[in-house]
Image (cartoon, rainbow, N blue to C red):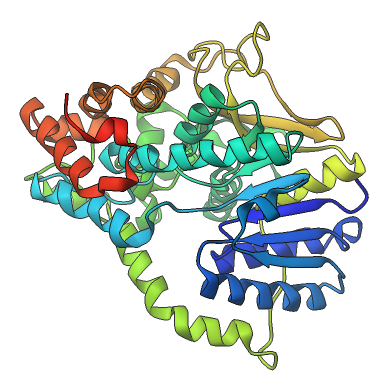
Length: 444
């Protein structure tokens, strides 16, 4: 595999594709890779194709670049498949996930991982990923599927129940948060040593050290002082209560628990700086700036910055091609193979966990962590319950499990009574229509 073939699914996500391409092509061993760009949006795909050639030139690389709206062509014989799709897009799907719950008094911040928005995103995304995996089984059965698509844990879990394709879920919350904490403490991020484990968007730093000394006393002092960054108040508050720092951002985390977003408690929203409707704001800003950005990206006279990102995708590909060992954080099943035992012993066998993984020519090899502190495992279980029932609804075709997932969701159940939860699920499923599998669309 001297020059691997890499399929990028959802390549119309131009900026993310640009960053990943810059990472990949900056390695001399990957400079001649066979890059296949796939998207269902021809216009966005055309832009990414042009950007790919500009990235290659800036990196002094000579890849083969193919852009296609034919998924079979992109996948055929691919050594690696990088997935970055968004089923339903901002319009209509994301708007529906925010606006319908508001009619019931349920407010959200990001709604892509858990909560009622995360449940709906999982219901419309997992079937598409499974359909893609069927194509991979037919066209590139030995590929490694690198999934960047949310809701991460539900997606990996749903795929594990329905496909044999090797898949690892990739997120940047672990490394981003480590950099944030280093800045808060005035230390170089490169000098921080950490160990992190849990579930995606709810993993915790079990160790966070500098030159062999734990930094938790300093982080706790900062939390107790109240002088924390305004955008991080939720996470520092959870550090005070749990004794460990969580990886995902405060805006995300605020909707995974029942403590911070409550009707009639605007004091909480203000005190902890919870940015309600944050994801729609970001989407509107990105859409509004797309035309100007597109012109810049396509203009050969406009400087194109190509620098290494913190994403793990290119590192995994490079390590598997060259054998250079690395450690990355990946989302995998807690019992990766039958009889292999659990990676995190006090979480369920059948759940998706985020743990450090060794990568070399043998592929992605997860690390066994053992027991998590019980308060962390207990909090994670509240999220795992929702993930499990959403996946179960899709695998079995039983609509009632969607209600059960919403019923057990920490934020939804803290805000709505049972009749409201049932009515909200019905309203969302009706609004999403064909994005939801037919077996789940009609009430029993």
